[in-house]
Amino acid sequence: MVTLTPITDPSRLREYYAFRCNTYRESHLKILNNGMDGTDRDAYDDRAMHFGWYVDGKLAGCIRFIEPDESSVSIPMLGYMTHATGAEAIRAHIRERKACGERMIEASRFCLAPEHRGLRTAREFVLAMITTLQPLGFEHSVFDCRAEHAAFYRLMGFATLGPDATYWVPKLEMSMAIFHYDFATLLERNKELQQRLGSTMVVGKAA
Image 1 (tube, rainbow, N blue to C red):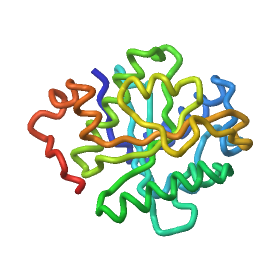
Image 2 (cartoon, rainbow, N blue to C red):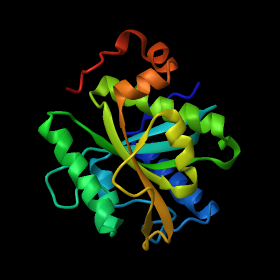
Image 3 (cartoon, rainbow, N blue to C red):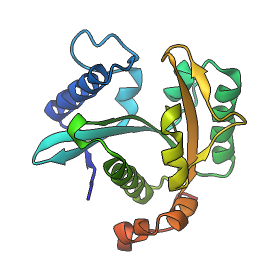
Image 4 (tube, rainbow, N blue to C red):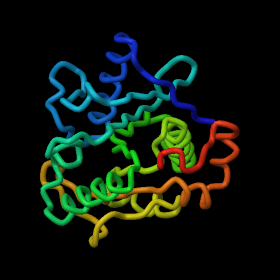
């Protein structure tokens, strides 16, 4: 079972930033900085929560979570989502959650080492993300993914955000799908979430 560990130690963080950079290079994906120093890091990392999946002491996967702030570009997606409809859908969702008094995050920099990629592992990793966030008070999240991966998230119970299925993102040179989730909906769709959380689960905690 995939479990996520907080990454706060400076040496672990250096390994983590290098892992992200190497993952994007290996995958031939356009990253959001030049990575000239062998790391992938941006301005959002200073206020992000960083987590890693370790196998035999070696980093095998990672993710970061960023809670929106009051700035006009408060999460990474809004820094590159130039499609007006997509950007407004994200902002509207943030406003709606805030009006309801519900905390939310953006999940980004989802990376897996090549030897651990596959639908089963990806699903395990996503479930680990959810079971990490819920006890921290987050039952809502937004994230984006490559358009060809959208069906995977729909099957798990995630819902697309906005009127369009996908959005072309020039900076990334690819079509992206924007998703969000409500914990209660995912709990109903993925029964093993309750088993994973056990006594730590307090449904509605974020409200």
